[in-house]
Length: 142
Image (cartoon, rainbow, N blue to C red; front, top):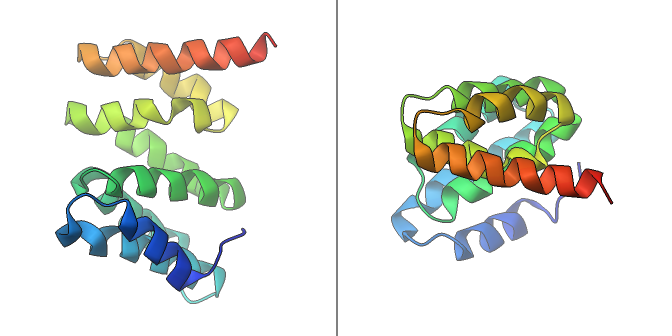
């Protein structure tokens, strides 16, 4: 998996975090990614850091965590199950965040979660899921 290096990635990610008190959340995700790449950490540790940042993070943090989950799961397919776990989260805000990433998920994960999130009890979640499903459908027709 390509990165621009641990410190550069952290510098760029922190620049997008609205609440600087939460910068550590995304920094820990990036450290875990690089530790995994260096052979000093497991996918489980990375999954834990991503889940924490995705659930607890504010603007800039959860988006970054989702982006790293997308990139890392392409190289470590077992991480795709994190999307399923987050999609079943009791908070609608977390399910909404997952719906925002539907169009960037692997096709099998997309197929499973798009049905689930499109019929979510929270209108905002279902609306976002349906918008992302529409984008995927439009790409498939071109």
